[in-house]
Length: 310
Image (cartoon, rainbow, N blue to C red; front, side, top):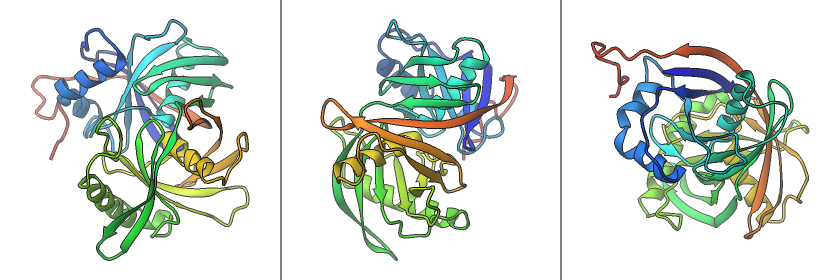
């Protein structure tokens, strides 16, 4: 299996160029459903230890569905096949440029969530125009032992988010373990109440957001991903959901660029324009760096060829 690894603001992306499973014909949504249903061993083999690493997201290239798209892609982590990935799209764009498949300028990519736009500025800098994002429910309360009633917003940004602001725990790298444990409990509690989206969608990410004293930064976030690891980047789809919340509450005007910072200090510059069905079209700019190009080997005699799954 031929792969190229990159990181976007510290968050790794593994682009799978060849050697993936046959997902048949149909839409990317149909192919993604087959991947999730029939190829669980493939997900863990690619991303779990010893071959993968915590927090890595994979981007499986598939043929595009729109004639004007450079490629199609299905994103997944070790726990789930996801709808969209902002940091992954930035990493994918830089990878495609390294391969000579795209050049500086504007391009489109087909994802499970829909067609997204990208602008490759140089070898490392990319702007993503995400799918329309929206605030779904404001002020949803959840009871958490030791913290009492916490209130947050349900938002869609290509994935499903529960966003708490201000954070009940200081968003600082020294609190990553504490925030991870709390966010897992919050997600489990919310999902126990039932779906939050029209298609039976459940919360897959939890965000803790807080302001910071640095005037160059609008706010800092901790983001829990479906695999229970934290996002090293500011999270592109999470930033999209947050923009939708700020817009719906009248706290940010269209076109105004703000800076989101991750819990490790990496940054995205983000803004939005009004969407066509009441949401917002987010724009996210960040940087990615290619780390490795490799051929993954899957020896039938290897007892952990499908990854370490406990």
